[in-house]
Image (cartoon, rainbow, N blue to C red; front, side):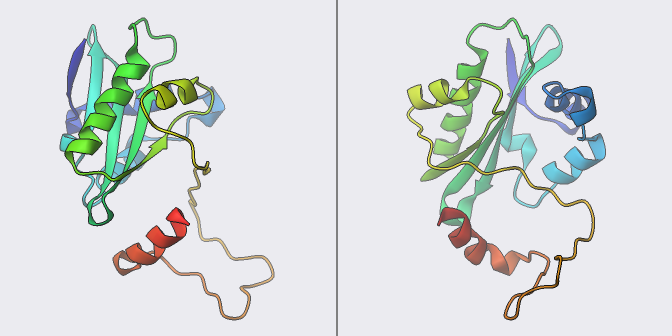
Length: 171
């Protein structure tokens, strides 16, 4: 198995890998959306995304989302369903954890498909479940039904909001 860093030439195949675990109607990720996600400032996928390739086909990927200012990282993985590589899931998790440690992580959040037996692997690798979040992505302008309560507002996230958002996420 070849283990290497992501390059932008991998985008089409990485998009297919990410969508490979979804049913036909749930394959919402396009190359354009993945490019937008990976191009976020500070993500540096050429450094923080490790790909696992067998016989010229991507079998898995591990992406660390670094939040350096608070020494927190998020580990996201993708595994091709029905792969034939022994211990692939454990290897991907170990590579991701090791990368997060090299970056100085004090806290590691994880993003794993709920349909796969990840809890046992994560526990065996020294992680534990604190809470679960749903993936939420808004594609259009949304107005709160009935308006916004007094004292509240809806606004776009700004970089200066990072400390407040971190406090909310870690509460």
